[in-house]
Image (cartoon, rainbow, N blue to C red; front, side, top):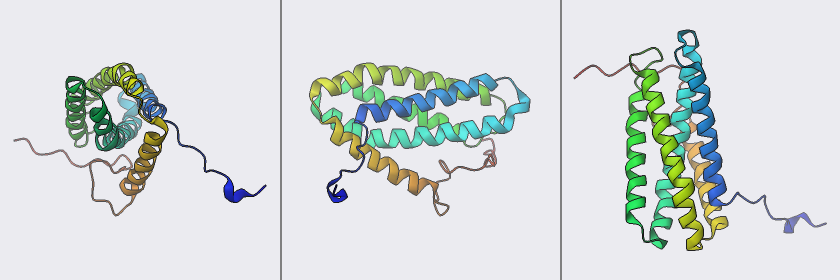
Length: 183
């Protein structure tokens, strides 16, 4: 058989790709919660939080850049889309707080827990209301999935490069930045 006509492996459709991201992040939050209250697991907590923040950052970027604008253009539900935008902004704020905290700091575990609760609510609204709206709108979910996968791959390459100056999402081998001085 001539391999030149063979199609590359298909990317998952957009909703499957986003749901897989959701499932991964929920799993990371569950693992963190299993360690909650344990001071002798601080190194693992820091690793988990770095991974959670990285995954959420990449995920929200592909949604903000591609999925949300496409969906907004084909549905008539500005309220739902505006709420999703605000929820993303709230997640970014909590992520920025976590980036300057260390496991064991006051409110560290609580901040991760609140982020997890907000993300769980956001995922529930997205997978029910938003995904249903995308299906009803008749979007080409395969094409959209290819776009999301390609952008996600670009971001993974860009953000994991040592030359990247985006401290906010660069894995730090549990070496967190020093906390900001109080105002």
